[in-house]
Length: 206
Image (cartoon, rainbow, N blue to C red):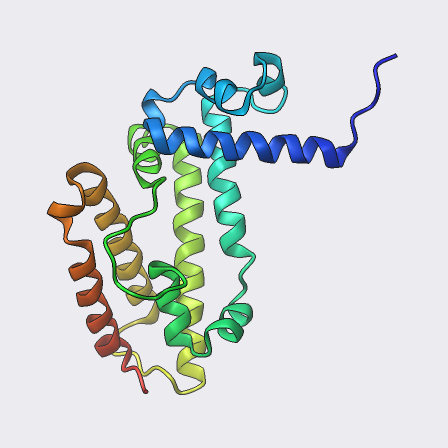
């Protein structure tokens, strides 16, 4: 009789596969990655992998969802409690916990670009892209609205338009950085410029 595998054990195995897949996508990119790469990285059989994920697309969506879940777990209230101000919380959304301009980019950015751009005519990927975009706009807009409510911001433009400009900057620099590399992109300098722009457009009060 085959012993039953607990739900907790299944979740641990799935998480291990997602972690291995994340490393593989970073190393090979989306297009060049294969399920065999993940099997080797996670030291599992073909059946052990396909038991949890049907194909590469299914696996990559799980990787993205895992990353997004970690971000969503940080509620605005939690962000404010850890950062102290709405301004610092906003900076953290695109600069990380250090909130300091640098030349580092999300290592999964190239794979995400491949996935969404090459699949722009695929209904499933398009819906996924829209969901991610609208979630990011919603969170950023809420941060700005709450910052205005407590008197920390005095926005000079529509709050949602400001949020969209931030997301467009993130997506645009991710594309340039992935294709041309850090030397061509000057990500640190661009980040510094964005911060100065946001200080002005949000009317940040120190």
